[in-house]
Length: 463
Image (cartoon, rainbow, N blue to C red; front, side, top):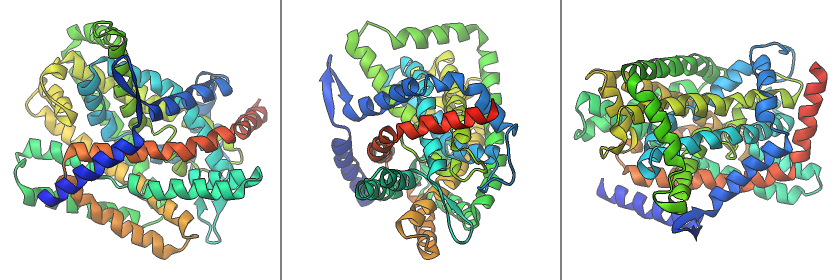
């Protein structure tokens, strides 16, 4: 296993150096790509007139089927599309990701994750609106959409077809690597092995990885409706189970709750380490928040693109709810249990920190976390596995052979998540995910006028 670990470490170091170029501000390395993404979030919040606030109620009404047309083009209901997209975003990033952010930047990092989640709602609305606008319908009836399509077709519509093809292909090629789900397997195995006492059992690790791969393949070998059928049941279940456990922990630690909330907020603006300390906390929160919400990355728009609707703006408004559930609710719950139980400064990192918080209630409570983590991880793997097949659909003009080949590679690589070093995994995934934001956000900014017009068109249709 040593050569594999060394190779991953070397590759991750090189990739981080390429993607995370930085400027030193008050003694803190501020990543240029972090500024790039946050600027995009703020831009669309202003460009769409705080649609993350104004459009929230309308988006919820669309989700519950108030304006649903079963005869509209598409394959999924708004709920199924949102559930599939949430399966890709509500996952290990909400459990281990929050813990990693706090271990790197302190409790204040959780505050900045929520702030970023607020602005992410507008950016998510923009990319989903464009994904539905520029989706295509294959001869066999399958609907395909996502950043690669709105980059290629949107730019072509504006008279820049070559640039659109370059950006769309760049996005697709990077996505094939970014979508390999090492982290989901790694962190779910970490929690399972802790509960079962299999930390030093390589055979068990490999068996777990293979088991996850087989289960994922059995679902992904079907069509989108097969994936949606599973995710539409798993997503509500996993959220309710996890939030129910979090509620019990917070009740047990009710006397610490207000103090924990105050600590998170005060630490976000603490001047103890100067301005550099605040910036460092913000950067830690931003890096994890992007991985958690995927706003600006564009991946979740692939699931939203297949919704049954005549108005792209309608699904854009539904997408506003995605970062709200993902960050405001699930990530906040994780942060509060970590800080209120006091485990955040006891030397833990990643999912071990969350597990330690669960253990403060009972020795068997981490078992519930293990169940939650497995459901989170599996649902994310399903959603992202579908995204990868859509990427192949774009690159290879809908040829089924390449989708099947990708599925074999995608599932075949999952077991590696149990045997490689976590830091290398996090760095690779973070780097590739952030790299996707470059072509995606260029396209979003260039096509922002279309986003505005499509949202206005939908609002006019229901007023």
